[in-house]
Length: 249
Ligand code: MF3
Ligand code: CO
Image (cartoon, rainbow, N blue to C red; front, side, top):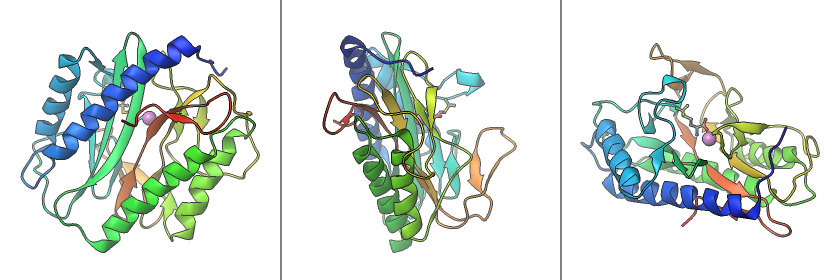
């Protein structure tokens, strides 16, 4: 069942989402060679708590940290550690926040210093795919119109979408129905309606789409070791016109 949100509930989700966006913006400024992903995690946690939010991922299915930090061939759910970032890395930062019982969720992939043109293109195409998906998030369209727009752009660029993880509805739970795959034929699934709030999150591999999970039980990496990027926004379907991106400042 897809839980529709009232205008009042959407405003609370907008507050949670704004704090996610502010934290990610602040984190971006902390990214430099030598900084450890654990330092980024501590920064994010303090930033969120100081502003009246609660980290959403910490404790979720025993996840140990506030942030997910996924470096290079890590796709999603990288656990912050003493690993220092180095020049040329790309790092996915994924963050969820709870305010007044409602969740916001967003992710971005950031360059550490100067990165290769190939890595920069992967990040650009992945972010573009997210925005093309969001463009389809309008009343009257069907859910898979979002999925299809993402897949099309990614594959036209010569990359692969990850199929083992999907976007999701979001509200009083981090993960609600519907699932939002990053692939599929257009014109399938539920019709999009005002009151739906979705986390759209393409994960894109430079090589093949296959992933595996490391022994830490969380970190997803590409099977072929190729680079991977991830961008995510929480969006609210509007009564008409384009979706409202709640995790954008
Ligand atoms: N954005 C991811 C998701 O929606 C992050 C979840 S990490 C977890 O699934 F630790 F909370 F699982
Ligand atoms: Co998500």
